Image (cartoon, rainbow, N blue to C red; front, top):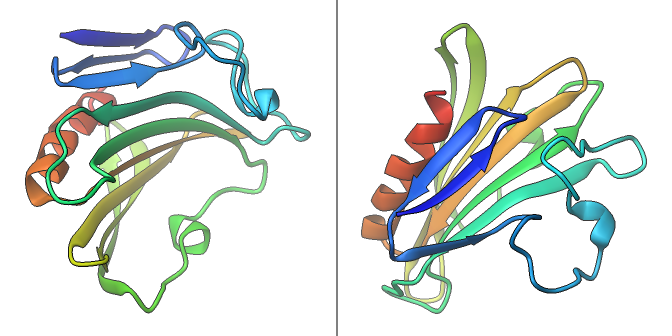
Length: 163
């Protein structure tokens, strides 16, 4: 198992061996936009740099297209709130959209499931967002070009939602 731990946000994720991930602690390259990436677990987004990618993971198994399966966690600076419906507007390629508001341990979590028409395949994705503190939100997204990959990513995201 590959394990990601972020003690600041109290996140621990066990990825299957077929997954790889990068975060500030194991990144080998210098990113094109370094302000978008934290330099420590507690490096928060601010008004001048409103998003920080905490984690980006990919399955090494390719099923339908070259896109495969992704899992991302991003911290957002949003002092005026955040809405998944405003963040991800509807496109003509959307085949299905389901928005929900969940409450887990008193935390309100927005979720948006989508099926989109790809070039010869269907793209499955689900976005989650919840308020961490007054100005900081956590955004988690999974996406896959195959239902098997999407189901695998759903199991992984369950670890984040349950902490």
